[in-house]
Length: 216
Ligand SMILES: C[S@@+](CC[C@H](N)C(=O)[O-])C[C@H]1O[C@@H](n2cnc3c(N)ncnc32)[C@H](O)[C@@H]1O
Image (cartoon, rainbow, N blue to C red):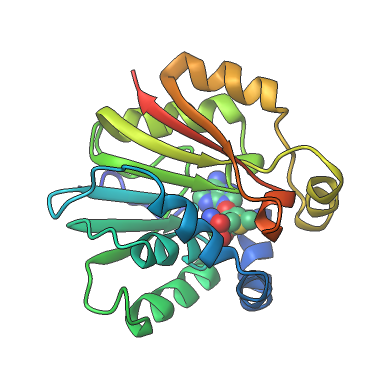
């Protein structure tokens, strides 16, 4: 499956996440992030079975993948890709130890979402949560479109504009994409199946929107 798996050059973002991986992981654990993601994914009919191949693009410490397995999905293989080796190390440890992911085929891969080291049409399902804020939106969506199979789905969870989003933008040094640009760019490559919100009682709702997209 892997294509030109050359080691990417260490960027500012990579060094930043290498440094903050532990604390970032703890913060997300404390605010119920994994549970919120899991509850939302469980509500979707994602048509995942033992033949499915899934990509968590920008997995960080792996919480979206963990939430996905918590939700009861059992794909044949999940690839957890990120720029940050430090984050991937934590993700790998969590996948190994966690009751829901222990023994499952989850492959951590270091790489860049703008040049995914995979052939065209590799994946049935892709997740992208809080990642495309670090890259030009259209390029990121185009690359995810490339590696998805026809009619494959992208669960796209961008940071949304607002007070909490702006605080995170400052702390984590990214750039929020206006939701209108998200819709425009998404429509270029995907059918928008749904545009949802997390329940307002859950902290993730203060900073994230959700788009369910299907490859055209
Ligand atoms: C806010 S964290 C989100 C992590 C995870 N998706 C989650 O929801 O917990 C952003 C992640 O994107 C990764 N990232 C940023 N730019 C990237 C790029 N160009 N390619 C791959 N990963 C990237 C960072 O290393 C970091 O782990």
